[in-house]
Structures are given as C-alpha cells and as structure tokens.
Image (cartoon, rainbow, N blue to C red):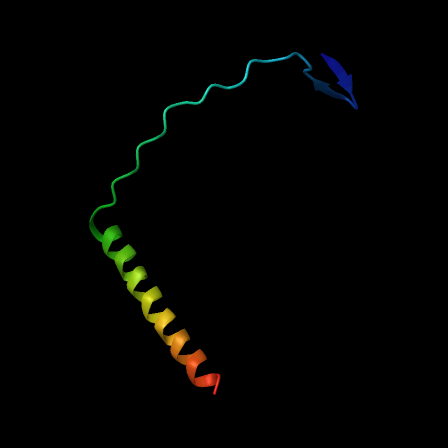
Length: 59
C-alpha cells in the first residue's frame, strides 16, 4: 500500500467481481397497480391534448 496525500491507496491487483444472479422483479399488487394504470391513462390523455394543441396552433 502507498500513502498519497495522507490517504492510503491499495495498488494490489484484484480478481474481477463475478456477476451475480439477476434479482427477480417485485410483484406489483393492489392500489399500487391502480396508481400505475392511472398514470398510464393520464400520460395518454396528455399526449392527445399536446397533439391537438400542436395541430391547432400550427395553422
């Protein structure tokens, strides 16, 4: 180990970190699922309103 600017730096070579198994997805249930569907509907409505606004404003 070297000391550089009052900090200890470990210069020893190390083995690369092996990948672990991917974590399973959490199951979304109940009111959380309803909120996510509500957000999807809200985004769809906002996109329609933006398209209508751009179409009417461009003429």
